[in-house]
Image 1 (cartoon, one colour):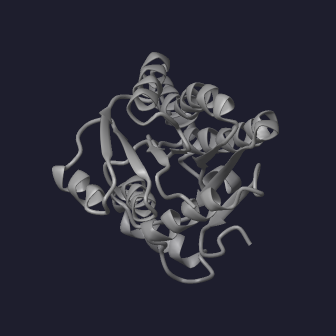
Image 2 (cartoon, rainbow, N blue to C red):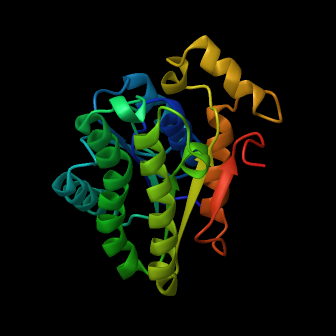
Length: 242
């Protein structure tokens, strides 16, 4: 079903984004791999090892003009934008009363505004195609909130609202938009958390284990293949939100 399609994955150099890019490559999708700092040549080679093309594009999705230029480049290179996965995200954890304006703004700009920027420019292409899949990365924190993550929680809760509004606006043209809300997943981002924090997180996970990046990647492929699901938030969290 996804064979020969084009999937754009932001923040795909490592972690969840890389796993998602590889999962779509295994399904036969050409991959547009967006990254901000650097990407290992091995990652590109691993994707192309599935017999698909990989177009790496460096840039910051919080930049409205960059998002527009990237979509133009993708359209020129592949002729379509079939799947957009908005995975790029950052954290700047701090207690609310100590959080700086920059710490708040930078997280909102990347996680929420960056998602809007990509949807805004990809949707114009998808509307003309009368087809497309948009998958936004929210978080269990966006559903439940979390101490020390007011900026991150606000950005990810915003992504849920953006997802539902996008789904309603674009449904008439055959475009779906859903969100995935991962729980505690083993990545470089979560590895920096203190041992005490990690233990506390494990205690509130009913399945009593951390998620793997492949769990999120499989959920993304599932949402891309099911064209009658839209406006939903799929919690992949080991039961944290029960």
